[in-house]
Image 1 (cartoon, rainbow, N blue to C red):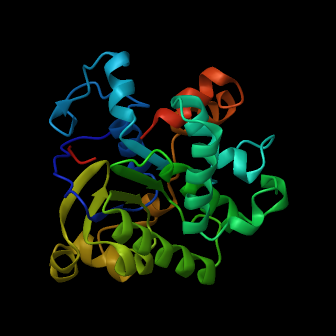
Image 2: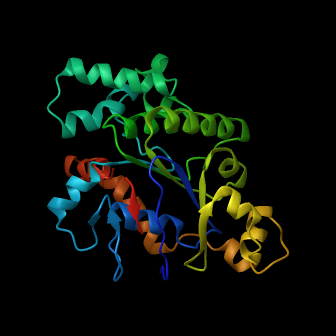
Length: 272
């Protein structure tokens, strides 16, 4: 359960949400994009309050979002080209020629042009994430969420992905929100950082402010030290069974058209 969380996400910059495992980072993400609805509180996206919004209106808001899930959430029965093109075919009336132009453009941005005919089972984890990134870009979203994008990648590929994220944010001017606990990645790509602890927000500020902050939780976490208020219980706690089940069901439902819609609809700048 999340409590006492209130912050504004700056437009056109990269913000990272960090914290020990089990502190609610992914739950916060799912609340912002509307996969979960909070029992109380407000979430504002581009001047619109979304918690009590009708599903029809929420669908319109989600079109502003792009999402890169941990494993890329690719459809195993589709090759890389069709995976990237999927949102355009599902949610627009563009011609196949226009879809092809956009798909190849985004594939080129992430370095996948030579792998368009391959299926997810034939490529590396890094390629899957890049394909998921390209798919998140095809609808020209104002806001892109990254749910632990470095999960399962070796340090070299993490560094490559960080540079790619930084480059594309600068090219598109979109607002990026990264859920992670990878401190070196945050230091490379983030402009602003928020730290969660025990389901609450310790602080959200510029990266420079957070580095200089004397809060013992922030100092311990950013330094990666064992000595401090964060104990092994927090570090060892993983996502709850409920959250794990929600994620699993979201991916499974993506195999039918209704679920694919829900998955790809999840697409600014907001106040939380």
